[in-house]
Image 1 (cartoon, one colour):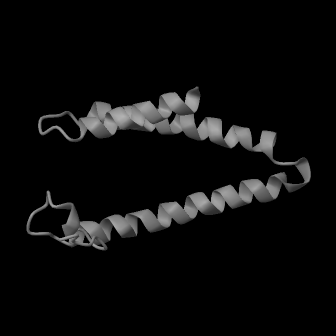
Image 2: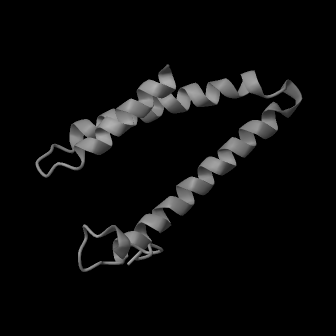
Length: 101
């Protein structure tokens, strides 16, 4: 239930970013709250699904995956933002996209 409510909150925040006239403070606060609750639920569920002898390895693996994402995603976002398409609303103008025409 917690994971579903966090996902709904994140979707609502992302939908709010599509509008032109919005206040950035409330959506970012909601996004932070949703992520905090989701991360708390996710990290506390690890001991329930991993046997006790491998618990340290499981936490280490989760931390490694999280840190890999935190280091790779900003680079990917920077790559996308530095590639200035002529029409920013054209999704095929992004790096790696193909034109089906």
